[in-house]
Length: 232
Length: 232
Image (cartoon, rainbow over all chains, first blue to last red; front, side, top):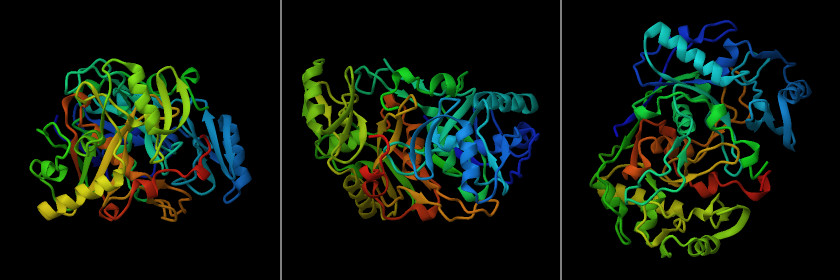
């Protein structure tokens, strides 16, 4: 396997409701077949108009938005709500976010991030004639590890989870259960060049294993069904 | 920020107890200052002799090793034990692993993976005169998301968590709490070129933000203290 390269797309403009993301990406990213484009939830939400007004510096105003977005609150600690969203994500504050959003507004998660990813993928194909995968990423905390990492909340044309069960390992033994969530690893890799404060919301990941470029969705492959859940 | 490149190191040999990892890496990896070397727990454990005999295909024999390695069992489901290790990691089966290990043996986690990372970092500096970071990676599941991802269980010379609190974001607002676990994102990025069954246990990650190359440990920065824990 060759190297994988993680390439920031510079000069991305402020995104406004109604903007066509595939046009904005196509004008700035030099894409090739087999690339995966990672785009942050924030610009997707802005393009899709998933913004609601909040009173600046008024915590109850923000809290009301969070409670409306959550389908379940799993834990509370101070201002932090650990919530389940309509998509089945477990994350802080139902994904409602004020950072990198105009003052007085909060960004909500896209209604269907897999669909958002498909739309961008299809738009790039139509506009540039390239076959790429798309991941919509967001920043989630983890239960037992400090620090947040970027994960996939939507994907199109690139695998969520790759099943290596039954693949012979290097010593010829059967691997028992190695289902790798490559979409989350790709989202995390992209974050390494985003530099939160520097406004790089679009990244190209190049050189990934070709068989990973296939139909998939986060909803279908990554969101863990309640029945499998040991900790909710 | 420029691109980040994730480079597999090919031709790594089977590692045996007593092997000096820094020699094995130095002979095969073309390293430069500022690179981060990601090495899987498996080869570290083998070099450090963290192997115990088990009866092949005998689940109780393996289970006994897991129970001895765990300091606490959080959940059980069938053969799967969700455990806490002596290091404070919460992971399946106390990190005990049979894949890519000679038949009749199980690999245990290194006793102190941060120390393992420091030893490799120091060895590479002594041998090649390069200043690199080192991450020891392992493959963990996640509470609410399917599929495993590689995370850092030890590090040296590279940040665990980067604190962006107080950094101005692209719109000039204060970011409230963005502590990014770059070590886990780097470990996950490295996994993308490891190809579980193809025996690439060492990967170079090149082009990372220079300020992340500093003293750090997984124990000190990433393992979440019990007092912060909402879900144990």
